[in-house]
Image 1: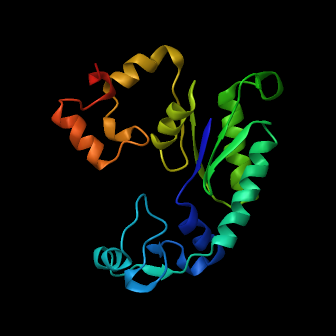
Image 2: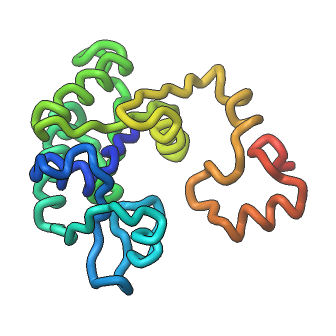
Length: 191
């Protein structure tokens, strides 16, 4: 199971500062030469403000994000003794054999989502379930925000056949260009 908090930094800022709710929020620092911390990749603040001039820039409060992260990890550890924190806003949880305690893994994931939302004051997470970690991470991105996606073992071959290579964790822009130059556009194209 891969648990990924949705828009973690910005969501915490909007929860802690209700006047920011419903507005475009950029979490970052260092002035125009600083970087946006709450984006899928680093972007200069000046570029972000140019793209969204009405955005509200708030400073990074890493201690606060770490505090909320610990709360989320505590929830996950109440379900499984095997929790691997991947970053401040995501973690893997081994759900193997936990059906006897929590019922079907899908139900356990739904309970985790509800409990995370409750203990964080409304923050949501997306969860991916799959037989292995890297597929669980891919699954957690399939239905964001507040999603739950399951990759069943008997459906994996078809899923991987059409999976774009850019959705594979660790495959960046340069690798995508190289793979595409070799006519590899999906995981199914890999010989």
